[in-house]
Length: 200
Image 1 (cartoon, rainbow, N blue to C red):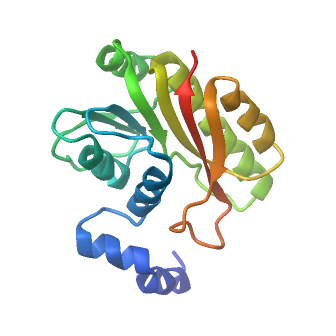
Image 2 (cartoon, rainbow, N blue to C red):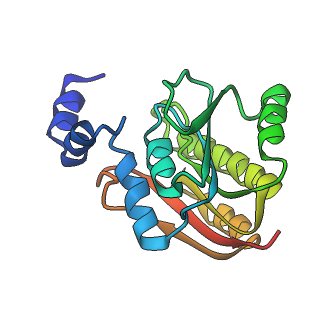
């Protein structure tokens, strides 16, 4: 990583807050802010966190659902355990991994959240297309697992494919809106799609 990026990150207020409060990354505050505004995760919910590593969203989710709720974290990368979180390591698109997740979620879940993002290659158009592909994977998974009335949150990059993706989500949920929380950096192209009220 460039030294300038490292210096900038260390000056970042959310990075400092995450370090001070024990969250594994500053991304925790993105979910906190989104949930404060839209109320997608509640006490007692069953939440699946896609692209969970290093685990900051799962940390927030398990706090929000409380002792009566449940959180499953899924990622290809190794992730350190979190109290109250079931970690499944593997590629969501692999049949064996999908079957493992399906076994855990066969009775349905309340919320699917996805912070999945592609490895950036410097080509904005390709990075955008890959981000939309991951967001579509998250949406397909939510359609398979979320109970009627449930909620969905996914990260994507803005670009020419984004409006069509919004239409896909809108066709399945009563409420759908793009949102950029304050914790997102000003230079970031990321946007979060917030959807509530799954219609099936």
